[in-house]
Length: 98
Image (tube, rainbow, N blue to C red; front, top):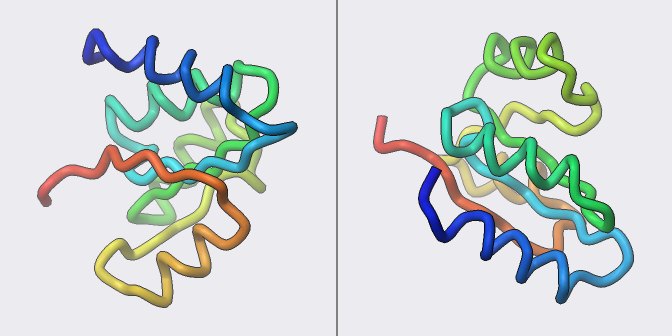
């Protein structure tokens, strides 16, 4: 994890309103999963993890993430992103260049 990630999450936590909904793009990857897990553990956050495939979604749910908090999202589709990010207050982009 990048050294700035934890201070960034702490800054978000300090400025968050009651239960900030945060979309984490790339939540199935190494960095995205780490950010998603940290946000799940911090009070005041309702993170939504965006993944590319149903297999990635299933893997996160099997790893203990709430199923309602993990969505399949095609980041190349405006409609898919808009639906996945509906109601979110912030976005953290952790997607790769695949």
